[in-house]
Length: 351
Ligand code: FE
Image (tube, rainbow, N blue to C red):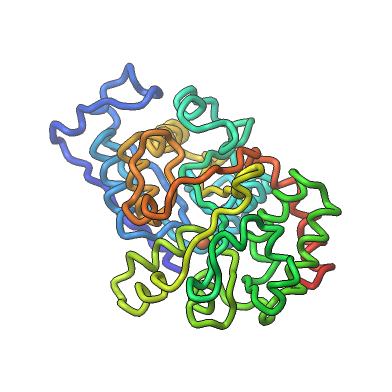
């Protein structure tokens, strides 16, 4: 974890500082924004992040300081820093985590017409405390030499007896699986989610272990036929420079579940304005910037995710994975069901 300040500022006197964007300061020339800064606490760490932050500085004259860290420790850190926290914006992944951060009282309500109009309502907190800036789908990967894609069409199919000893997943208490089960509770009720988890566990090829990438690698290696993973882990193997990783990608296929039903489970990475933010206006401006076409491209392409703002081009690999019907269930509805989801995964032995 690197907690030192990373100076991204391009604070100059150049003409670029005169460009005015965003609604917050539309009436104030950005030249006066000089000396302003915004402090981002982020669990993102991608190559294109520097471009993402530099472009904001170029447009607004506002210097960006970044603290990168693991998601949960960042939340703890903001909490413990209290009202003296320098954090203006928290960026993190997963609806469940954003919900938890909000439960901790970390986020302020942001009333931004820009964010409300650009980000679909199901991908943000109805009260404006957090916003999704990229999407990921939780899909099924299969070993192409063992499974035909039409053999598995739904999450429920993973519980069929024919897949006994052929399915793998990371542990059930991982936030991605928790959000998936919470989504199931919302759409089908807790009893159905419980049965699904039970059926999944009954089909496991091995005790849950490793992260999503480890599941894809195990499927490619023939340890199992099927696994549940987020889309970007698949795409990131394709764009990896290591030929061995590309080989893994070539051995697996992606199934977008529930296409005939409500659509595939969606999650987000996103963020919000910190309630104690010392630079509130700059923080809001930064959040609005993340919904701009340029930032959306950086933000989504950095990790092979799906942009949330319509019309943003996909990365080539993500595009090659094909189009699909995504669930429109409100991401905000997962959070209140997380406690129940954990009970379900625990009680059914998804550990
Ligand atoms: Fe991830």
